[in-house]
Amino acid sequence: MTPPKSTRLPHDERREQLVLLGLELLGRTPHDQVSIGEIARAAGISKGLLYHYFPTKSDFVVSVLRASRDELERRMAPDLSVPMSAGERLDASIDAFLAYVEDRATGFLAVARAREGDDEAIRNVLQEGRRRRVSAMVEFAAALAAVPRAEVESPALEAAIEGWLAFCEGVVVRWLAGRDLPREDVLHLLRQNLLAVYESVAGVDARPAVARLAEAAGRLAARGQPAGI
Image (cartoon, rainbow, N blue to C red; front, side):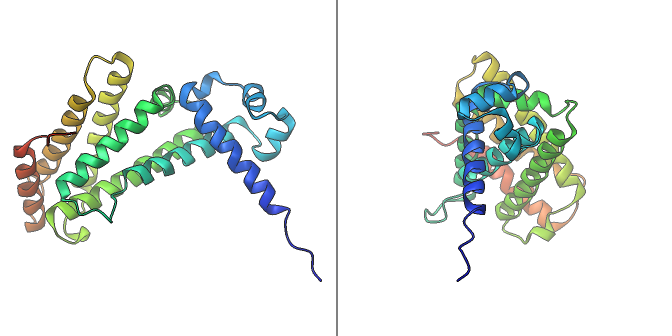
């Protein structure tokens, strides 16, 4: 009888445990201030064993960043079992984002700095995350306008969303560093700015679906921030 292939699973499980540890560790300590030795000690293993799973510190940080991105996307994804309007979906998504970054403030601030850092692998995984976020926001724009994605998708919309993401990161970095704004005010700024961004695209894209997006965003913006957020 062929023996069961059990060697692969423990390796993957151990690697996953190390990534989960990294999520906790790098959430409170900037990755550029943590050494491989500190990571290994926190995991209760030798540096040699850590290098067995992650050949370099950059490999470890990249794996943690991907896991962090996946967790954030899960938190921000709408609960399809609960009926929600597009506006409620937007508010819930931004609120989940703010809760997540508030829990991992130190790590988020470090990641914001790393976006322009020297480590190409880290920059690449952050750029990959940004592309996924842009795609998700294009999808939301289509849902808000109640049209197929292809009818609103364009370089102009993607560029506008990329600008909003930079704005979003700047506001959140200031909020986390200064704590001089209530969280609900931060949510309001991000929400209303995004809706204004959606409206603005109609100025350079004359398609009917984009006009519908602008109208829907304008109506939602006029209602302001719902109570209870």
